[in-house]
Length: 314
Image (cartoon, rainbow, N blue to C red; front, side, top):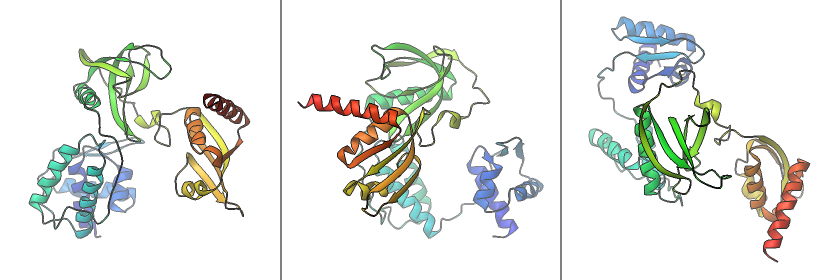
């Protein structure tokens, strides 16, 4: 791709987003980050005003959105649009599926698409998003956009009753099919994560109290590497036998897993789990086809859990 084409591509990217980091621009354009500065100068010479943001996460923002000529999608891009449509419509927990479908149909009306069906069949046995959860998320989204605090009653896993919460909502996230809100808790004076659930969360309402978002806030500081909330990291080593050895060799287990088969086709795994509960749930789910080697402390807790399970079936 020549220099002029790269400049036009950079303009398209900036016009489609509010802010783009230098690293991301360089990656999208498959060029050196130093070249981005030169492309910016050429675009400004052509009359486009681009704001620069310095620092570690610095990048660029187009000061005024431009009306660009309609560019046709190539065959690969059309296929990607079709498969994304098939994939998202198969995921019943996708919050904005109705809005996405309308947007997809509008794009199709401007461009020549053959058939919106994908050659790939996506099937997900995922529960429908509960209407109560949907309403709570919508309220939280509105509060976030208007920088308003919210109040609700919440019962955590370890609590015996519902407690009042006042929260400044920062981010709404979908993690492994479940929706969460990450925000600053006025009660705990710290950032906390709350799960949207009709079982855990009641009476969500927007307060007539505005908050100023912390400019240094970075959502990645509160997320784990596996996409879960940050928790105690446990390094484990275990062996999986039988059919499960083949099944789990095809999956990603924990964080940074290292796996290999021995001569008996047993799968040896070394990996990190974020949170003891996650480790216990995974190991118990494998039943007799898994043998935990380390850590010893977790092995003892697992033995106690198995004894309790046996008592339930005596």
